[in-house]
Length: 369
Ligand code: UD1
Image (cartoon, rainbow, N blue to C red; front, side, top):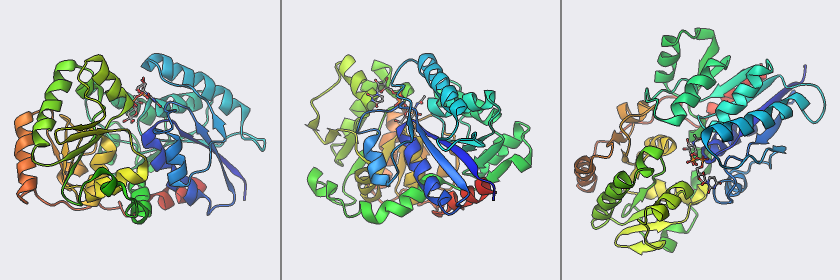
């Protein structure tokens, strides 16, 4: 069989758990060779290295080390360095037959653009998701990436509907399920062995898990301070563990909203967590309060109530079938839903079709054809 050279790109934290199962599934096809490229959008050990270790993913073959910056500058740096890397081709010679990108971060968009300009076909894993909210940087990334990808690998039915509405042909789309849930199912037994609950002094089902990093929630001092006071209020009833993203930490410091990392009432700010500690906590939490797209999906797969601090979602299946409720930054609604959770009245969800731990196998079969 003719060798197929795939350039596989990761850049930011949520990319790693999507790419790891795919690289593993592609190993079943000896004619497929993968080059793993890390843009370096995320570079802190706690946002990057720990994921490679815990997910059992090989070190990147190429590191672009772009670092942080404004959107334009960061995207431009990735575009320039990615173009050079793609032009150079795989280490064993020849050219790249295809680029594979995942998710909706700046690295996804910039890598896809570099490939499209070099006429290298692009496969987008997690295609078709739309929040219809152009104030989210990820929405622009999704729309542009899909527009220049010829292979659209979709995680939930809404993605197919969105792409059809945008005039994309059916033969470009494949409803394959959710690769992030592959990683969750694969590593849940390992995560359950971690001792993070006793280390944080919490009991299973007797704490909540909080994350917050969207610009719409953390960039404005009034919004962030209001959310924190609601969370502090909730934490009087249920201890809340809050691993703080570096972006959120710097805002807390700039706005002088920070209490030292550690105990402050029941709201406990801790350093960013690795994948396994995070999964150990989310899978045993009473409730998750978050603005993360990934956690909306993971909570749905785990059957844990998820109060989503966003006005909209590009992942509607997590609301329609799963355990997520959109709260926006409505403090009263958050309190009402939290009371439902604590009283055992919060409605149960179901796990969406094809979120079965085998999405990467389906994608690998399509890529290897
Ligand atoms: C990015 C993604 C977002 C994803 C999130 C997960 C985009 C537009 N956003 O947001 O979709 O949900 O990752 O974490 O791509 N920083 C560090 N160390 C790092 C990386 C960043 O301290 O290793 C700090 C820097 O101050 C940086 C800021 O975090 O400016 C924001 O990082 P950036 O990658 O631009 O966006 P995220 O907010 O992480």
